[in-house]
Image (cartoon, helix red, strand yellow):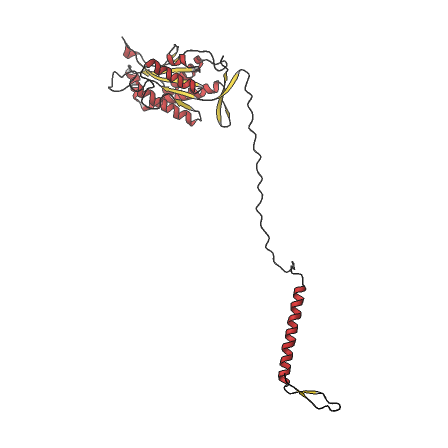
Length: 297
């Protein structure tokens, strides 16, 4: 900016503008600068968090989920003098391996061992579908020991070592001698050892299963027979042995060859086992079946 000193004269200004336009331009810039400073100071002095004019996105918290209170497992009062054991049914397919069992007089290569294994497998499948645990004495074609007596003892040992609730041995009968071809039908053997379940006998077990097989298959039921067979003597739980039919009788022989008869026989055995478990008071606890057994001396 240029200023020119004027001569001092009475009643006249001391100075005069040489370039008025430039003067006002500079003044305007100065005033704008001052205004900007004032605005900045005023802004900084305001509340920095004016909540009325600031849009705030609320924080979305997950909806709390109440933790369910676990239902207490009811305790079981085991009656005095009894034990509480899981239900295990041992199914024994008679014979096997080099021991064929009875042999067909009508069809070469048709043996008891294959019929018993087929029926036993079907029984296991049917019981498993009902949630009943099954242990087989043999799963395949072979027997347990070359010595027949030892083999029979080992089958009973399988049941005893698994603390079985029930034992069922499946067989095919044969008759030798005069009139063999005319002897037919199904039979169930039992022994009546010391009771494991209160007021329940092996005789009742045999009767229940025998009637269910008869109802399922329509085969002649020759009744229940008490006999000290090896697997019945050596087992400590209720045990029965089923002779499903006579391979030496032509009608029974044809039944034993039939898939339908084997399935129905298995259904009858499985149903008889279910009814027997009801009879001895099997009950469910934590999704498993249990029974109360008498404490052995």
